[in-house]
Length: 610
Image 1 (tube, rainbow, N blue to C red):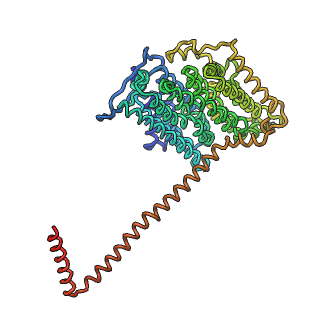
Image 2 (cartoon, one colour):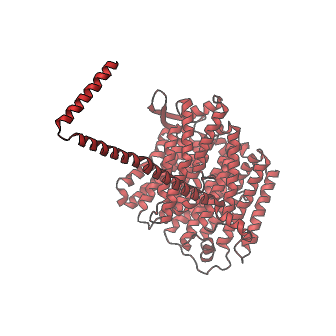
């Protein structure tokens, strides 16, 4: 089969499932689930076939869709090492999450809608990845937002889920306004948005520096919204109100990584402006540190992982903004594996404990759920950056790239690494080593066997994926040396110090039993500040309240001061004129003749004056 055909399958198969569900197959949920699983398998196969059969130099195929004198839009595929690697990540994680969902959603009466919407999300995400034109990318980008809204709010009878879905949709729209503005600026100079055309324009240095900076900052707004970077990040923890497979698919591996992918795709444009690159790097370091501190005090398991995702997405952007596509994208790949593993393991714990509270999970479940415990330990060890595991291999490349940009950025990244080790091992100790654990053994249902199998597969992948850096670098068109780890370097030594300090403090706080509050609780003001998410969410609530109140007052002023007065004035004037006309129409012939003679005299005088 041709690459075009594989791409058609990757995007078309899940889209067909969505329309089948939409057009009436919801009455047969098992059929929808079966079709969805088959489409997910086809997507995974198609993405890997595109990656394995990619010719040297890549492959681009597009056809005009809308053409005017000043603007043209093309639809098609642009397959490169970057896009096919990302497609493999999306396809593989999508398949594993679909299999996991068979057990997780087994008893849900609306599972047909769930699987159909998952399929829509896969189509939209692959549309972003494989597009040949940024206009096509933008359409798929917005479709991802729609699918995410539907999945986060899947349990829409829960007020928290409905509110979280609205929050995610609205906040990401703010970022998308910037993205749209950036695309509009490009169109004003190029006349089209073909990715190859944009990259050639950047390479030829045809735009003045200020214009490049403006485009980069506008696009960065969209990236910040989709990849949950400060200040548009507060929607992601709330999005954990959706089903756990949604949390895993959207918020660990694919949707939130769409912004990172766009940065990697257009990395030459961002790096062409020193200001934009430095701003993006500083923003990523700040966001990573903020999110890591909140994860250190969060008590809900899924929300800890959500704040962790924000922090790790920032690490990806650090690597890209520092100039290393291999480092940033490699961390995206490894993070997809171990964070998906952590979310799906969390789903097993929550299913057994019927709560997401860490202390309750530690008391009720703990090590009595061995598969979940295995996934949690492997995922947290990888997340913390333990040598040889996936997180260490990619994060070390990121730290090396950031080190070359200055000690301020590097120090912030190292501090975040130490905090990452702290909250990762805190998660393990609270969930698995509670000294007051109840002696109740968990007995998983048959449906959970699907979920447990996926967790085991992901645990194995997480153990091995960190050693694929050289192969990934070559697939991206770079040298394998860019993924080489210098084990005896000072950078590795500093990373090990950060790991030991973070994990050691977590052991002191939580690993020895007894008091379970942690070191941050010894500083109540700091603890409250971190637990509040540094007050960013409160700021947005205040801003929205003040903004809505201001708009309401403005609308009231316009309505009463302008519209009402205009309408009332028109009515009053009509009434007065009507009264005058009524008095004039009194049936007296003498009055009518007087008016006629008056008009005639006025006319004659006017003619005489001329």
